[in-house]
Length: 167
Image (cartoon, rainbow, N blue to C red; front, side, top):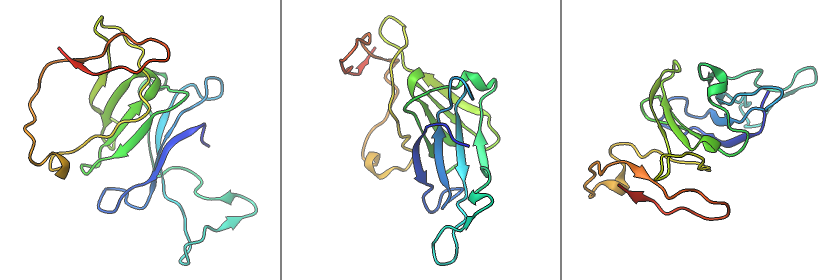
């Protein structure tokens, strides 16, 4: 069912879907040329083991939730990427090979989207994974946060790491 999953994690206690597994399912350029975010409810037994059925294997038989873009091919990353469940129930998605971040609602609507660009307006940055810090995050409690303009990186070149610059 999955094609090269990344960033598989248990959804934390207190978040919608707590105890389920959330992951970025990369896809496959031939078999399924799009990526998706998948939430799985793992059918554990009371003792914490995972039941095996010789006819169907391990469960579950499918996701309890998934995000697929419209059109599906508009979100495809054959490597890297990630997903994060937010307190609102929305999901933050990193589309790694596109250098793109987006937040989607439980019904699949895009709340916002951002693509990393360089100082010349070009794209091409690979983003391994990102995290979204929500309002109230303790690590930002004493900080003044204000917009400071567009965030652009120097043009990407093979084998180098970019330094973030504000313009």
